[in-house]
Image 1 (tube, rainbow, N blue to C red):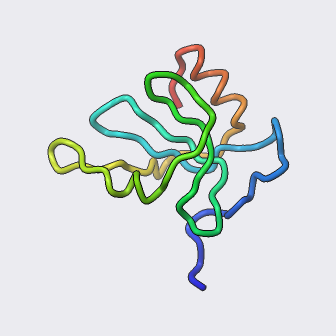
Image 2 (cartoon, one colour):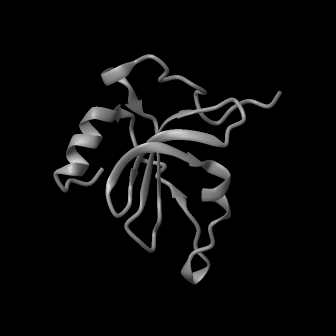
Image 3 (spheres, rainbow, N blue to C red):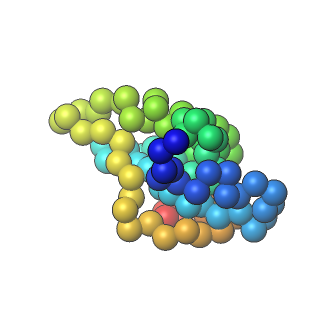
Length: 99
């Protein structure tokens, strides 16, 4: 079995202490995906999605990888993102802040 890029299911059961561990973003738009957990198959992810609204939910890593954006760009991983409490991110995003 290959080594994971993400700490699989590392936020299970943490409730309000859960952290966002990875941030993905659309460099041509305003959508951002904040990953909290990822399943063993490394595709099914759960976290906060900032698009038209701020929502908690699931998303597919493979779908993010397959998106082709204008100018030949793709969804990017923020390599400088540091883990932060999910509650802080969610509350901040709903108040118009950026992370």
